[in-house]
Image 1 (cartoon, one colour):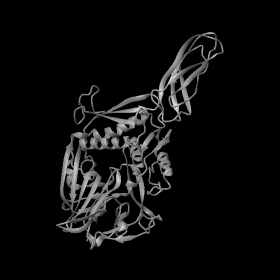
Image 2 (image 1 turned 30 degrees about the vertical axis):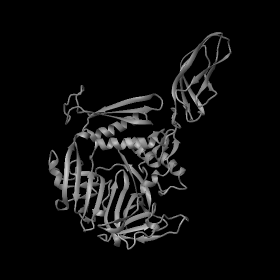
Image 3 (image 1 turned 90 degrees about the vertical axis):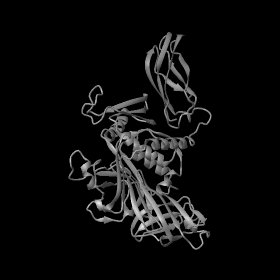
Image 4 (image 1 turned 90 degrees about the horizontal axis):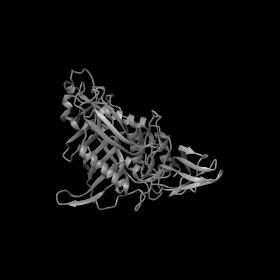
Length: 491
């Protein structure tokens, strides 16, 4: 059975008439429990062994997509749905159920789709994505904790086959040092009486002390300075919606003008990253680069702490299973790591942001909490994860045998012509071929002249996915010239 009076509730998905609502508690027959919380993400995953008299009998509340809620009285430790329930028979342990679950945030991955936005705030984009899925989205519709600081930056992304988790992750990245998670709602309950899943998104807090760990609470730690996050020049490549590809570079002011180390803590090291094809202005790209620089310009660490006990900010003991990611841990014993002995919590010295919590208890009754803390970076693993995400997203995009522009992504190009011996008042036209095939015909074309001679105002006609006709009126008899750029709208 589970220790500390933890209860493991399993129930069929509420608010549906496909099958009856079944609710059961399995804490008495649960062994070897392990669950995680992560930032970004919220509730991570859960695994456990359930020993039953006959594990072969069908139990809908333990079936695929049924719900799970791990509770400590009124406190939710984990909430999600079963993802890989398996019936097992082996020689050592006999017959049992090996259950695995994913946190409620998995519901954000249900519906990859297309969408396009023009100069919208991140809040407005997320609200629109929620509205498009309102009839089936398993996450609570309450968005009061989605960017409560209401950032004013606007974005014009075109999402081709993106699901809601990718949209949220993309916007958090574009806003700067933001994080998100799907946690239990404070007051809303589902049809079975358990907390609904609520999306929360906010700037990352690295200063507030949420938990403390005294020397007697610590089973072990590993703190190692990380060269993978030691950079004092950051250059990001991005795509401007009007001017196309560009780069922006920010540097640690402690470096000398020519790049010599000067007062910087280490020699000049540049981090270069691509922000992908999301349309960003120079101001937005600079804000992202600056946020990275602030994290990397001082030597940081890979940190892992294993605890037998944890306390709140006031020093009162807490059950290990109540600790969550997206909080900060203060370890007074690490104060001596600073250049000067600190008298209180100092981020990066003796206080660390919690990236992941992993609570484990075995069938023998042993239990512990492992925390992966701020600055834990595995560059190879990070790049591999990026490749997997990119490959997965690529499988959902359209255009299998030719290059097709993503829905809503404007095409910008050069156009125009010089025509000799034209009559006064004549309307002349030139066919303009797009560089790629558009997802759909644009609703209009914005034309910007750069050089004209003997020509009236130009216009676009015969709009299609392949191109358009550039036309203008000749002012007087003779040669006429119109040169400029075009930008598609509404494609």
